[in-house]
Every structure is written in structure tokens, then in C-alpha cells.
Amino acid sequence: MKTRDDSTRNVSIIGTGLSAIFAARIIQERSDRKVILFDKARGVGGRLATRRSENGKFDHGLQYFDIESISGIPEIQELIEKEIITSISGSNRFFTPGGMTNIAKYLLQNHQINKEHKLTSISSRDKGFQISFENGKNYVCDDMILSSPIPQTLEILENSQVVVNSDTLGSLKKLAYNMCLVVMVEANNKLEKRNNELGLKVANGKISWIGDNYVKNVSDTINFYTIHCSPEFSLDNFDKSNDEINEALDIELQAYFHGGYRILSNHKWRYSIPKSFYQRDTSLVLQSDGFLGLCGDIFTNGRFDGAIQSGISIAEKYLTYDF
Ligand SMILES: Cc1cc2nc3c(=O)[nH]c(=O)nc-3n(C[C@H](O)[C@H](O)[C@H](O)COP(=O)(O)OP(=O)(O)OC[C@H]3O[C@@H](n4cnc5c(N)ncnc54)[C@H](O)[C@@H]3O)c2cc1C
Image (cartoon, rainbow, N blue to C red; front, side, top):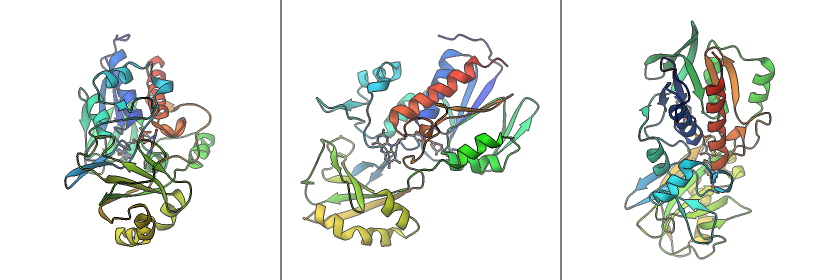
């Protein structure tokens, strides 16, 4: 239900990941403000990421999620009813048949999105902003919400005419994320060792997770596995070539896939799961005239439910702000 009539205000949201999706939906649902989303990527979803390779698909970002703390949110119920998300009976690990990006595609179907728009700087105008993108385009908006990982947000702010309180800036600068190298393989045989219904969590070594995309119905082809490397291995090898990374993993991969395997794709997440968190609030308002807010999983718990809670938090702050 719309609670405000302020159709002349417009807000630009940077990102199309979970926090941005929920910020956009809440604002659109509860007000007449115009919402436009921008993402630097070709697709939507951010770390909700799925990639096709040969005859199958891989979730290469988020693998599965818990909905306990967010089960009352109408969108979550709708995603379950529409069978966009599901879990294996008796488990609280939810996933998306067809791939994680389906969540973003479904929830953003009625939203205006500009893809391949990487925000580079923000200039303050009379009660609003001019925002400039790497592709040379510029737009004017009243208000802004940034959901980009904090180091990327800080880079944008450094190129911008936005004054940020030095105490806040200091705490944002301390925030950091783990890197994650991802290898997507087709194995000749099924993964034998598993410690949950969706794959194998590994405590030590170069690999931290092996996810089965066939069990999740992400891939129609059997034995399509997503390998996440450990934070330590990812940090030490992040700047190496894919060939060097794949070679360094060969002995461990052979130990898991005795019958042989083929690497179909690689991905590098510079910002995967936060390793430190913003402790003061679940989102942050940097400036209030026009409104400039930040959200994202680093403001909560670094996970699916936390990213959603942070998006809702910034939308509610925005909607209750008296301009
Ligand atoms: C490898 C990996 C495994 C994970 N596993 C799990 C898991 O099993 N369970 C779980 O609950 N969580 C997991 N997570 C964490 C989960 O994916 C995140 O918590 C959540 O998706 C974050 O959403 P977000 O909106 O905060 O950020 P993001 O999804 O990162 O969204 C940020 C968006 O901003 C865009 N952007 C950045 N800079 C710019 C710019 N300058 N201009 C325009 N757009 C920009 C990006 O393209 C992106 O779309 C995992 C993450 C990774 C990477």
C-alpha cells in the first residue's frame, strides 16, 4: 500500500543485488517516488550469480541460504509459492532451481534497470545529485542509495563531491571482504564425500566448498560442481592466471574426483563474504539533503537474509525522512 504521494522525487539505486532489490521494492511499494536501478554488470543479481557453460549451469556466488529470520517477508513467501526457491525436504537450506539469478530476475521484473552502467562519481547539485557512469552517461536524481561493496563505494565517494563525516569514513575504511576464487568443473563421477545434501563443506586446505549444481536443479547435466577456494588460497593466488590457479588446485581436485574432471570456467570474487562488519546500524545515511544512503550485507551478517534486511532498513529510513 502506498503511504506517500511524492511522485516528483526520484531515487537512483546502485546495484541489483539482494539489498538493492529489497530497497527498490519497498520504496516502489510504499511511495510514488520513481526508482531507477543501475548495475555495472550485464546481468542482475550481484552475488546471486549463475553461469551457463556447455550443457549445464553453475551457481558461482551464493550457494544456499537460510530464511528463518526473513520468512515473514511477503516476497519470500511468494518466491516459495512460485517455486522460485525451494529446499530439500527436512532441510533449512534454500536454493533456486534454474540458478540464483532467477531470484533477482523475478523480483525485479517490474523495475526500471540500466545495466552496464558503472557509477564513477557523484556531484552534488541544488538539492540532488548528478551521477556519472563509466560509459559516458550522466543522470540527475534527487536521492541515491548505493549497495556496492564498501571498497567500491569508497572509490566512488573519493571521486565525488560528497562530504562524509571523518568518523564514519574511518569506520567504513576498516571494513573488508574475503576474496574467493571459483572453479567450475564437470566431473566424470559423482562426488563421493558430502556433509550436507547440497555438497561438501571443507574445513582445511585450498578448497572450502564443493557445491552440486545437479542436486539443486541448477544444471540439467550431472556432475557439474562449483568449487570455492578458501579465503587464504584465494588471497595468495588472486592475481595469478586461471591456468596457474587451476594447476595449483589439481592435486586436491583429483583427490575429490578420482575419475577425472574438466574445468569449464573460472571466476574471481574480489569481494565475496565480509570478514568484518559495520557494527553501528543495519544501513547508513551519509547525507540527507538529497538523501544518500548505503546498504549491503556488510551492515548485517554477510549473508542472504542480512542483505535483504539491510535493503529494507535503508528504504525505511529513506521513506520516513522528512525533506
Ligand atoms: C562465493 C560466494 C559464496 C556465498 N555463499 C553464500 C551462502 O552460501 N549463503 C549466504 O547466505 N550467502 C552467501 N554469500 C553472500 C551473499 O551472496 C551476499 O550476502 C549477498 O548476495 C549480498 O548482496 P548485496 O546486495 O549486499 O551485494 P551484491 O550482491 O554484491 O550487490 C552489489 C551490486 O552492486 C553492483 N556494483 C558494484 N559497484 C558498482 C558501480 N560502481 N556501479 C554500478 N553497480 C555497481 C554489483 O555489480 C552488484 O550487482 C556468498 C557470496 C559469495 C561471493
